[in-house]
Each structure stands twice: as structure tokens, then as C-alpha cells.
Image (cartoon, rainbow, N blue to C red):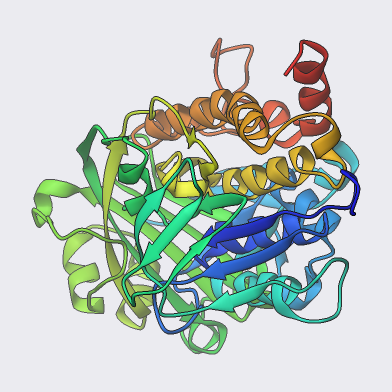
Length: 411
């Protein structure tokens, strides 16, 4: 008979995006048996760049994810440009993140880091039994108390722990009895990428070589955020504008658009950026929503993770890091010997106590930063904006210490 210290959980993870794969890796490292269910017939990723500040990057390192194979650019500074001329108005060094917080501020292409998480989850090499991936498995019904999932293809499964990483339009969330209260944002966003070869041909080499997060605007709704990723082979742009401009109502963040639409939306922008936009690739429109914090994240044997639990505006660059932290919390709570301390249900309540207040604070800060760049970490300090989210609070977070405090108060 296996003891409580070596009896692994059967874990079902709904969704093979970044958050779902991070949870899979974290729980694999604790030697649980993990199956990831993806609704589509592939487990891929789309999108532009993804910032992983030290609070996210240190978890990737802890799990043994091959960060260098994900081709990060280490961001060194913030650059503020004049909207119309592109002239540099301010430049702020990010400093030595490794010295301050133990690891780098990495900027990834989403596709690259997703590929490395996928390897860490499913390949034979690595600590813990390899996870199993099942595609074309769209979860349509869940019994939270029994841990049973029914799929659209007629299959079903029962797990000891169910992690719902099925995104902002989570079906699992509704199955847990949570009805989101959300409003349309005042903003929409285009995202696009452009290759380094195109930028060099346009004479825009500095956008690759600056190793910076670069801004145009940002003290209102209009804002362009640009950064290099994929070892400098790609530059990514997020371009925010008032939603009434095109009255976009389609739901999603992957709505096809054209360079011409991008140019029409920003007619008075810096000519160098307009030259970039004219040659931009993979242009997509993204409708933004402001979700009120959900009343709870767990029920029975099921928990929410990532955008299913705490959808954010992108303006603090912490959406993926918060999903990585959620995954890290599950790995800490459901360590190999957890059964000697508490049940799965108690562990999930502990997960919510550990994660919900912090993620909610970052979520609310992302809402404020959408229309006021001063609310972004790094643009002002705690001394002149009381209560503002700070770099130290975000990047210096000690999750293990936080968990010890909670456990000292009793589970």
C-alpha cells in the first residue's frame, strides 16, 4: 500500500495554453499523474510578446524549463517617445533585476515559451512522470464534487484534482456557479509583429537593438507598447485606442485585421512607427473587457487558474506571470507529502487564500494602468502614489514565505 507521501494525484487540466501547461509542469515536478485536455485538435499558441518579470521567470527556472531555448530578450530599459514625432522624451533603466530579485526580466514570443513549456510537460526527460495530452476534448460539463468531466466527443473522466485553465471565456467557471460581471472596456487593441529583417530594411534597427519596452502615449487611452522578443528576430507591438473608433463588438483577441486598418486608426502617430505598421505581420484586433473579481475560485475538487480566475488588462504585463504564480501555488500546496497535512478540498481552499488577494490586487492595478501610465509599475514610486503597486511588491514576492504564514494560522 502506498503511503501518504508517495500516493500521487490523478490531475485533469482543462486547457493547454500557457497557464494550463505551467500547472502541468508544476504538478509533474511533484510526481502527480497529469492529463491535459485541449478543446482543439492541436496544443499551440498564438499572439505577440509576453513579458515574464522575475516573479514569473523564477518559477520557470524552478521547474527546469529551458528558458534560453525560448529565445528571450532581457529587457534593460523603458523608453518614452513623443506620440507625433517619436522623439525620445524619457529613458529609464530597469536596473539589474537579477541582483535585485534573483532572475531576469525576460521578454518572450508567446509561441517560443509555449513550446518549451510543452516540452517540459510532455517529454520523457525531466523530473516526474510525463504528462499526457489529449486534444479534441472540449469540456462541456463538470461535477465539481466528484471531479468528473464530460467532453463534447462523448468521453468522460474522473480526477482527484481538476484545474480549469480554459481562459477568459471559461465554461468551467459557469459550471462552478460563477456568473461573470463584466463591462466593455473603453479601449480596444491591435497587436502585431514584424521581423527584424524588415525593420533593418526600413532603417529601424534601433527598435531591435534597444532591448527596451518602448512607449508612445499612455497617459490616456491611446498607447503603443513595443518590445523585441525571440532573440531579437521579432518586434511586437500592442496598440491601444478608444473602442468607439470602430465599435468593435466581436469577442476575442485573435480577430484578423490588416496593416491598413492599423494605419487608419493612428493617423497622427510618429512616421517611423507608421512605416513599421505598413509592413506589420499577423495583425489582430483584441476586444478588452473589465471583469469584476469573481467571488470564489474553487469548488469541490475543481479550481480556476489564469484568465479563467482573474482576467486582466495587459497594461501591467502580469497576466502570464499571475498564471505562472497560480501554477506555482498548486505545486507548493500539492507537494508529494501533502496528504499527511490536508485533503484536496482543503488544499484548494488554501490555494484560493494564497492566490486570490494578490491576483486581485494586480488585476485592479491593471485596470487603472489602462488609462494612466503612472499606475504602471516602474513609472512612479510608492512614495508619491500611496497604495500603488510597486516593482518590489510584484517581483520580490515570496510565495513560499506567504504560504508558511497561512499554514501557521491553520488550514
